[in-house]
Every structure is written in structure tokens, then in C-alpha cells.
Image (cartoon, rainbow, N blue to C red; front, side, top):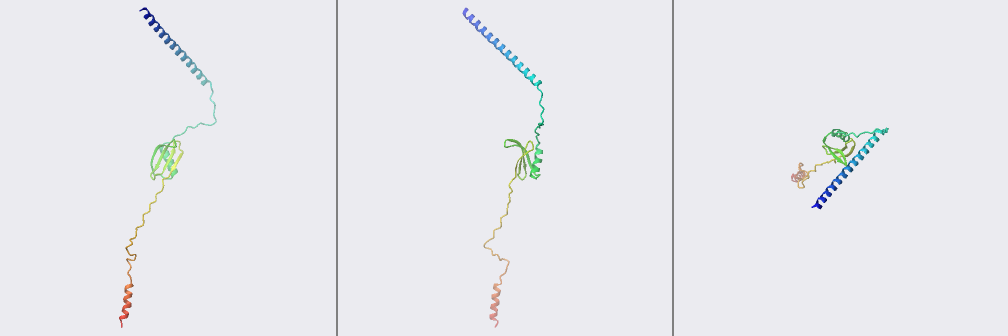
Amino acid sequence: MRKVTVFISFVLTTFVLVMLYGVVKAYQSNEAMQAAQVAVQQDVVTSTPVPTDVPTSTPTIITPEEAAQLAVQVVGQDNLLSAETSTFNGLNAYLITFTNKDVVYVGLDGQILSVQVAPVVVSVAPQPKKDKNKNDNQGQVSNGGGEHEDDHNDEHDD
């Protein structure tokens, strides 16, 4: 029984030493990380900003109403059907649709990406077909029979 007690004592002592080693390593790594952050913060504070001659502009995002107004100016029609968000060639854009099925893609920055004009459909009424059995001279009276009678009357006048 004495061996079992020594073995349990050895296992518990080893466990405590391993845990203590882990705590010390974590503490040292935390201190090193804090020191690195302080050094970076000091570098940022001491560095001076470099002035630039070119002003940086932030992209302005237009509203769907503004996109519709741009599309009306491009197409020249004001018969809008809808304005919705869509994508065109992988770019976010507004899809402006007109009642005659014209489509305009306007980028979020106000740039016209595409104009698709709907094809014009012309429909022509077919000509009425003439009936082959009907005579073209329905309203006209033929004088052929009357002339024949006149010639016949001349013969009998004697």
C-alpha cells in the first residue's frame, strides 16, 4: 500500500508542476504582447502625416430617384416603370425600366453602365382577300345586249 501512495503523490506533483509551467508561459507571452503594442503605439504617435497634393474623394452613392432622373435624360422619355437595385457585370447598379421596355443600368456612382433600347414592333394589317368567284364589274351594266337588239330592229323595219 505504501507504493500506491507514493505513485499518487508523484502523479499529483507532476500535474501541479505542468500547470504552473503553463501559467508562467502564458504570463510571459502576455507581457511580450503588451510590450509590442506599446512600441507600435509609440511609433504611430511619433510619425508625422505626409501631406498629399491630390485630394482624396469619397465615392458618392446616388439614390434610385436620382438614377431614374439620369436615365430619363439619357433615353429622352419620362414614362418610367420601375427603379430597382441589380448587378451589371459584377457591379452594383440601379436597373431603370421604362413602360416601352427600354432598360438603363446606372451605377451607384451615377455613371451610365448600359442602355438597352427595346426593339420597335410594327404590325401591318393584312390586305383583305378578293373572292375569285365575284365579278369585278358588279355595279356596271353591259350594253352588249342592247346593241344587238338595235341591229336586229334595223333588219325588221322594212
